[in-house]
Amino acid sequence: MPLARRKLAVAIAAVALAAALVLSVAAIWIAYGERTRGSILLGTLIFGLSVFAVHFIAMAGTGFVGLDGGDTAGPALSDETLAMGVALSSFVICGAFLLSSVTFFAVRVEQTAETEEPMTGTAPGRVPVPYEKEGRTQFVDAGAIAAVRAEGHYTVLYSGAERLFCPRSISEAAKRLAPAGLIRAHRSYLVSPALVTELRRTKDTGVCHFDGVEALGKVPVSRSRLAEVRRVLGV
Image (cartoon, rainbow, N blue to C red; front, side, top):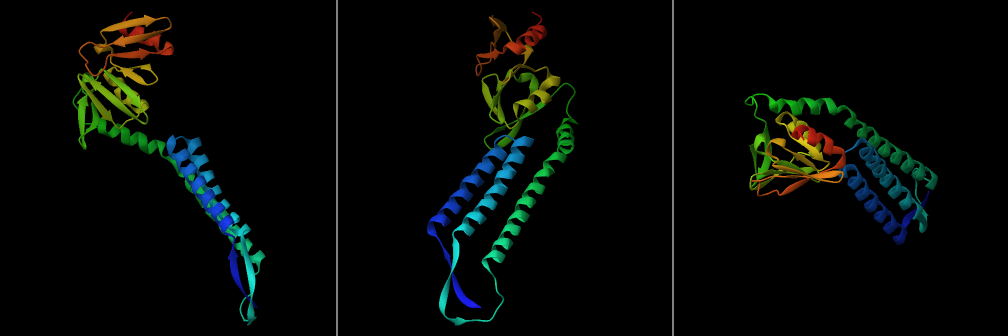
């Protein structure tokens, strides 16, 4: 078998590295930006594409140059055989990523059981809401919360003169705080009807005002939520 050395084009290697970095970052950004089934599946496909692309781009710039100095005994490994091995390994890796992505379909029941467990053992009529302050997790009674505002994947609680950071999303907060009477006034806001001191209507929307809540002046009421807010407030 003739002796040969591998030769890799620098430009092709740079393209393969750039493709791997761009596609991998895009996969993580899509998969973890919003944790929906579609985004997780799309992120998995893009990550598999990044592995697939970096192999075949590198293969396109790889060649072998014969060396003078005679032959040596050993198994013959042609370019076609090497390409087939790389192709098969790429499909195996991509398939493993696709199979691992389907595990998120079975999480819903387990999460429901976990979210209901902390409610046991609390005092009747009291709904503790966690918030983080100075590196510690503390709790505030839901009855003392005037409003909740969405802040990305988290929320901000308004209680008196304080603005408290809560690790829950606005959707989870709406579900947890429903027993305490908080209602959805806007896609980004929950309000406590018991602490609303004034409701002003502006055409098809409205504004809730809170006296005595220094950290919060007013909360917008969307057109789709105005009727429900008026009904709960009795107007």
